[in-house]
Amino acid sequence: MSTIQKVNFEPVTDILPVHRRDFPLADPTLADPANASALIDGEWMVLNSSYQILRAASIGGAGNAATVRSFPLWAEKGRTDVQAMSLKKMPILFGGFYEIDTRVFDASAVVNGGLAITSVMQPLKVASVSIGGKIYCGLVGTQYSSSDPIVGYVTKLPANNGGKLRFIQGFRS
Image 1: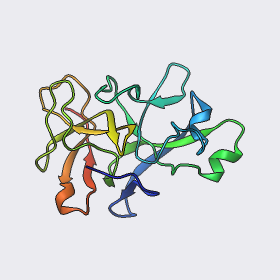
Image 2 (image 1 turned 180 degrees about the vertical axis):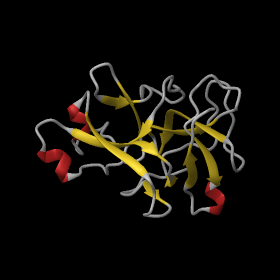
Image 3 (image 1 turned 45 degrees about the vertical axis):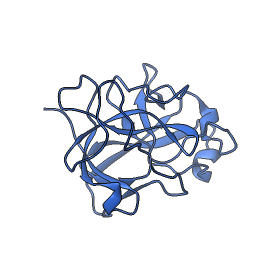
Image 4 (image 1 turned 45 degrees about the horizontal axis):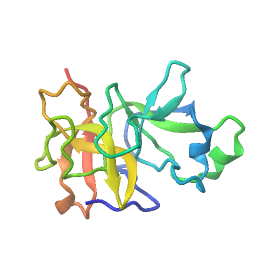
């Protein structure tokens, strides 16, 4: 089981060809660190029809899978640059190739016919997960045959990585 900290999502190396993109939040109150449902770095987001970002899955309870392509949030909770903008924009990793260590996952969750995270190169999908009694949009294990979007593949298991899950981004071919 993971624990949420100040930095929950960090690249393995600082030399990664990533395409970071700022989008306005569909719900600007999620940028407020005092909000009980505030976003944290490493949560997964989707674009809506108004070109705004929102959580990839409902956080009304654990086990809700994302049904469209999701993107990881690249902003720590309470960033002052986000707070200073009238139009609350937050960065997501919108493209490129990256390998990331994350704390926003549940290795034992089984969502929509998925699998617990147990092996290197296992595919990952996005779902609402319970971490420390709070619900976030994070990574869970899945199968190649799943109809839910695959967003990455395990490269290092939490047991061998200080409790963090390491993954590479990926698209189903």
